[in-house]
Amino acid sequence: MMPRKPYISSAISFEPLEETLDIKPLGSSLSIAIPKENAFQENRIALSPDAVGVLINNGHAVSVETKAGEGAHFSDKDYAEAGAIIVYDKKEIFRSELIVKSAPVSDEELPLLAIGQTIISPIHLPVMKSHILEKMMEKKVTSLSFENLKDESGHNPIVRSMSEIAGSSVMLIAGQYLSSANNGKGMLLGGISGIPPTKVIIIGAGIVGEYAARTALAMGASVKVFDNNIYKLKRLQNNIGVRLWTSVLEPKVLAKQLKTCDVAVGALTSSGGRTPVVVSEEMVSMMRPGSVIVDVSIDRGGCFETSEVTSHEEPVVSKYGVIHYGVPNIPSGFARTASQAISNVLMPLLLTIGDEGGLEKLVWHQLNIRNGIYLFKGSLTNFHLSQRFNLKYTDLNLLIASQR
Image (cartoon, rainbow, N blue to C red; front, side, top):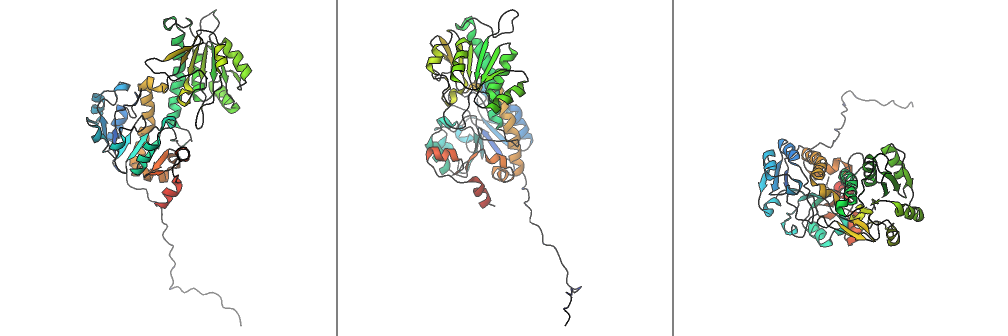
């Protein structure tokens, strides 16, 4: 018997199944608050009046605690004219759903945090305390850190801007302490016809090192850069576009160069933990009296053995006749520029958070933002913090997927 051919009745109709798409939620109006920072030497503010004006024009509500912008020379009047509500009570400020800070959450602010709040701020890993982290976890807080926030290109935009400011200002600081007024050698950094240029040594070829080298070259100094990362040295050469004297960190070569230099800059970075000490006390003792050390790495312990933390009030100490500048958080000394740089990153981010209907929704769409989140609705999602404080770690990707 012949096999029958398949027969399809005209009465049967085929309809494709509907595809379920991830529909973008409607934008929401954010309630953003900026408290006044009481942290030591923190003069920056996370949003400038211009940025606040843009957020308000996009339908968001912004409250600013009185005198929050004073350190960066932004007045309450500037913020009020931009449309912000000036608040005189700190408790009132912490009632907003989204808090934007330029310093980490402090002990005094812990009791003021609301359940389920969102906080965008730095974490300052070296001085982070476990009880603050635990209390934030208890209050189901979602936190995004400046240090780990990444943009679409995979860079850390706030850290990069702060490094650019620190690097550029290093040479201005060094020039200041080389002058006779500050009991320095009475030398100008260079660029004067017939006079040999001042010799500058930079240890570290990251962003800080690159911008320090740019400024030093622009001032006419002679620059020598040390780093163990050949890629960073090549990148520095290419970015600056001038042939520079570069070397890996050879102790003998470094000691020889330090002996004859006028300015030494510590610009080494560490991926986690303390910066390695690459200049011993003995090397410093061989340096010329009156020369200047600016240790930008002091935030993470410093890369000169003789470095110590100083303040803006008393910025320098002298050891072996060498002037040591060890003020941490250099960008805070240039607070207005630094505030504008932070604001340039946060304002577009806040607009996007509003458009997406909240940070939790944005995290689903933008993978790069996930890097910056260290607390998600009270769960600790940063592996380094969980290791350091022995707290339970939860994978953020799993958390987000489980909520869909």
